[in-house]
Length: 175
Image (cartoon, rainbow, N blue to C red; front, top):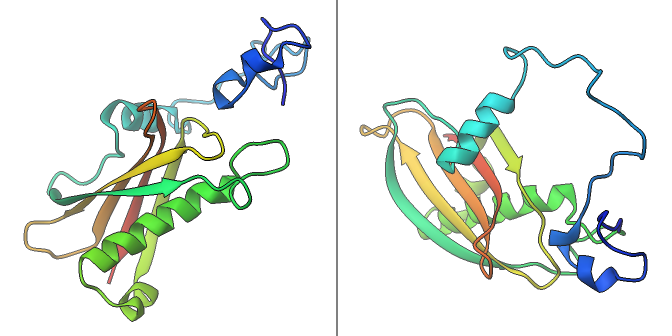
């Protein structure tokens, strides 16, 4: 794991954990001269808005139906890659675990879970977690008042000890 600029090579304890990560930009690389992405092609505005709101935008006629909270303990033997970062796919696995827990809480069967149709899924990664960290998976189920159309499941992955928001997800589920 790279050290931050402020640490001496032997002072790794100061940079221990996911909070001490530094930029992976190669020394001497200057990105300022590269052209920017045109605003209409950049996801940055949507992601910045999602970060500020705590969820992605949905159609205005969708209302919050129910909120849920589940726990997830980060497993060092299953969730991490060789350099000590959560696998990219782990975030999707955590989102799927949250969806299945909501499904169960709603009294829906495993077969209904398998038969569901996920028509869109967005995940915004904001941070990483240390091995053994306890995460809070906060989910909000949203639907139209008449229950027509797909359901939106907004998920926030939060590190319990610090309250740090690690990821935001939106899953669009159609029957």
